[in-house]
Amino acid sequence: MRGSWAAAGVVLVLTGVCHAAEPTQVDVKEAKEDGTDGIRVVPKYFQPSSGNGPGSLGFSYAVRKAIATPDAQQDISPTAYRLYKLDFKADGNVAFNRDVNPADFLKTGLELNALYQHSTPVLIGAPGSGCVPTDPATAAACREEAKRSTSGDSTTLLSGLIASYETNRKFDKKNWTYGAHLTPLYRPAPDSPLNRLNPLDWPFRLLRPLFHHPLGAAASPDAFPKFRIAVERVKPKDDQDRAAILGSADDYNRGNVEVVFTTPVAFIKNQQVKFDFGWRYFREIHPDARIRAAGLDRSRYTASTLRLDSGWQLTYASGRLPLDRANEKAWELGYRIQFE
Image: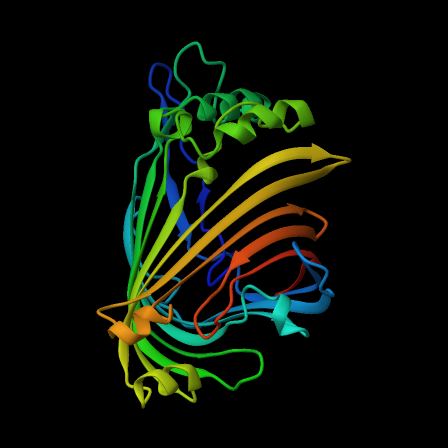
C-alpha cells in the first residue's frame, strides 16, 4: 500500500550514560511518516486470479518529495516536537490492460502537514543486566535488554490540509479534491502488552522461527497498524458515470480510511522477507439515492504483499478504487526500484 503512503516508521536513537545503580534512558527522537524522499517504480506483471483472461504488463509508482521544511537547526525537544512541512506526493498503479487492474487510480497532490510526537524513554543499563551503554563490548546485551523493555512507546499525530488531482489510466475520468487528514501513528514499547498481544503479528511470530529470522518469535513493534483518515471535497470532471445518473456531475464530500501494517516473516538466503498489508475504503458522505443504487457511493481495495530486500515482490490485490466501476482480483509480480 502500498497505496498513498507507504508504511510509517520510528527510528530509535540510543543515547545516554550508564550510572552504577540507575538505568539509562534511551529516547525515541525522530519519526517519519512515509520513509525517505524519492521515487519508487515497480515494473510488474498482472495476472487475473480467476477466469481465463489474459494478463498484462504494467507498473506502479510512488513519489515523495518535501518541498518546504523547517530549519534543521531548530531547537526540538527529544521527546515531543511540532514540525510543519509541505510535501508533494504521487501514487499510481498502471496496467496496460486496464481490465485486470484493481487499482486503476492515479492520485497526485500536495499536503501541508503539522506533526506532533510524544515518546517515553527505553531504560537500559539496569543492575545485573550486563549492559553498559558506554562500553561497546556490551552492545549485544544492551540490544537484548531494550527488546525486553516495557517503556519506549511513541505516539505521533500527523495532520494537515490536502489538495490533489485524481484520474484513471486513460485520463477519461478526473477529480479535483481538497480537504484535510489525520494520521495517528503509535509504536508500542517492545515488551508492552499491546505489542505482545497484537493479533495481526501472531501468525508471523509463529513463522519467523521456522525461517530463521533473527527476531524469532518476539513481537515486532513495527507490526502495529497505522491509520489515516481523510475528508475531501470532490469536484468531478469528465465523470460520465455520475453525469449519466444525475444529469450533471456535481461536487460532493467523501470520506477515506486507510489501514496498513508491515511485519517481518522470514530470512532466506541472506534476504529478509516482509509482509505488507493495506486496506483502503472510500465512501461518499450523504450520497444521492441514485448514486447509492448504482454502487458509486463507495469503493474498497485490499492488497497483501510478500517482498524481499532484493526488490522482488508478490502482491494479491482485490476490489476497486474511485473512478472504477468493476471489482477486480489479480496477482502482481514486480521488482521494486528506488531512486533517491
